Amino acid sequence: MLYLLTGSNGAGKSLRSVWQMRELLKEGRDVYWTNYRGFGVRLAITMANGERREVKHFPDAREWKQLPPNSVLFIDEAQQIMPSRRGGKSPPEFVTELDTHRSRGIDIYMTTPSPMKIDSEVRSLFAGHFHLIAFGDKQSRVFRFSECQEDPQSSSLRSQAAFELWAHPQELYGCYDSSEQHLTKAKPPWRQRIAKLLFVGAALLAVWVIYALFFAESEPTKPSAPSSGGLASMFGGGVSRGRSDAPRFRNAQEYLRYFTPRVPEAPWSMPAADATLKAKPALYCISSGAGLDGDGRPSEGGCRCLTEQGTRYVLPRAKCEVVARTGGAYNPYLDPATPTLASASSAGVPTSGQLRIMYIMYKTGQIFRRAQAPFSCSWREASRRETAIAQTTSGPMLATRGDSPQESRPHPRPPVMGPVPHRV
Image (cartoon, rainbow, N blue to C red; front, side):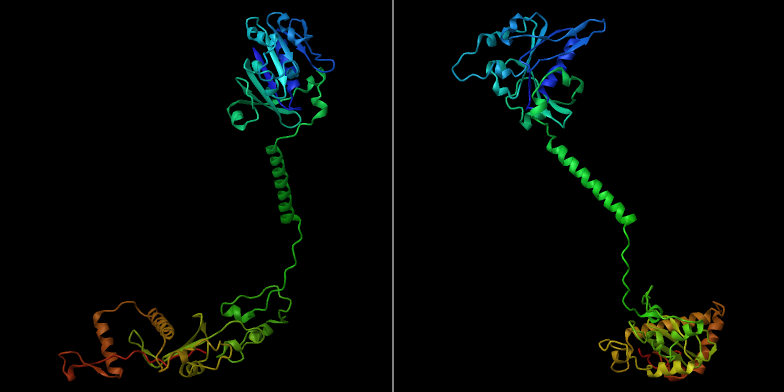
């Protein structure tokens, strides 16, 4: 059988052929070499039975018919012995006689840089084609074809070939002289170079991340912008932490005075809001006169105030009623473009926001009163309470269809509430 080994300089063709010689020696075959540089191939092995076998030099590859049967011949740089012919010339006799090499039991291995450099008559006889490509300094990629391929560099042909990654047997470097070891340095494939670059980049990125997380000094924090301080925390704003200009208090009394409004009905008048006021506080008060509550019990009435957040704000009753009737003091911190509750209604009609606050305060008072009394009563008790309400309240009489004026019942008036609260 004829076999072809191709590849550029440094791909490992000669080393692969010497490695193949050793494998054939182990099988007990006679191995010959020819056309190798320098001192040729110096390879010998010792068999298991103690017999020493070595490769032998064959002087002229053109006389291959003189080889003993079942022997193997390795021809290096085969293009020098059987070069490619020009058109019209007949092949040499030793080339045409290669058709009968199988009948003699002789195998021939040829190495050449390219299949196109040897005779076309020989190319048609190869039963195996090994194309080697260097993969780093100590490995080669071997593509095996079942016949000679004129363009083994083709990617489409390589995809159809059997592939193996062959590690160079370094112990065989001293068994032959080859210019491949000195003239050309194998270059790793571009995929391997890209993989190495990506690996180095990933390693540098990992080192930078670790340094940034654990070893980098944190930048000094810039002082935050002035905030509304205590007033913002009271009405929902954030409180600035870690400020160098934050006030210092010698005792608890100074702290309380700092957050105590100068005018009780104006919570924004506290000293904490003097410099940097960001919030827009508002105060809503509602008062009710004396009368019966929802359970029919006498009530002295009351007055309570809420902030714009719906939180309770405690004022003396006299001042609470003043705010409920007059709308409270002028608030200089409101945006002029922001309509107040007093200006939102042109004719004293409560706005939707006013009605919601009034309803919430009214229902809150009812729930609080009912919590102190039984939750249920008989229908007689309910009738008695309804009669008591009709007798003690004043207001227009509400007549129904079919009722005489004498039979009309007084319409119960809701609890007395102060004027529409005004937003301040």
